[in-house]
Image (tube, rainbow, N blue to C red):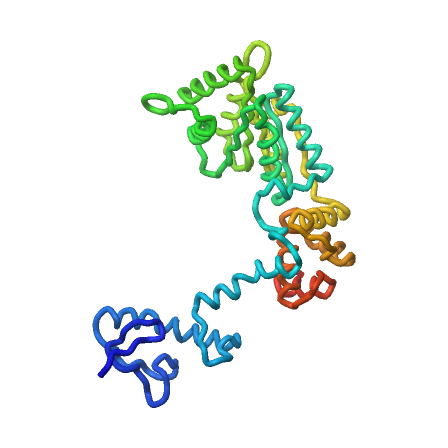
Length: 354
């Protein structure tokens, strides 16, 4: 008896296991025991998956010809849809990708105000600045824009991402690592980190430079870490503060700071700014701006879709990006050249957004 192989190329050391004219992976018949050994273990682990894959492919209409597509070919065909929709609309890249790309930063009126205030906060050697707003309004992207603007020689900017489990030691260690300050010798402790950071700030001050620490997701910081922020703002010379700390947080953070335990920290906030959701006109310009940066030369979105897009997204940048990406994919799957009201309604139904 000659050796045969399964549809996955695994030798079974015998003929294919059939019941009459039926293949062994049919779900309505019991399995006949294959050969013993490693092939048996692999066969048993893969065969149920092979059954499900075959039924899925037939249901999706992929097995229309005698030639069977491989799993990789099927995955490439379906996962490559995003690249295809860029080509379909004449785009060079995805305009609504969920990432922090400064090239796609659209400065609304509130973003411009926050950017200018935080720049002035650092240039005038203020101790503490605060930017707050709803999740998805662009705080992290604003932090990256500030990082780029500060990195021009006069300032030494660093960005710290706060996490719920971050301790006082962890916060100081993150700042020290970003500034490339050596760890304290011997046993690490809070005072040792503060002394090392203070020494570094004095050195940069003597060279005419200023450290700017941008703390993103500051609402995650517990009470002790916020008091450590206050301690860092106490590092100063007789003339001015040695560093500026800019906190970016969600809109619940200012209410938390109204508690009496944070009176000292709140009094050190020299400038603050609230990132409001985009207005209707800003939502339209935001979409057109991102499409232009992505390489669009035509009006892909019909004029009558901007009102419902703004209504469903609430003017939140992240929600506009999510809806815009789904709209482009939906139009591509329907072979539509533009985003029309029909495409929008279909997309909202498909993705449970209504």
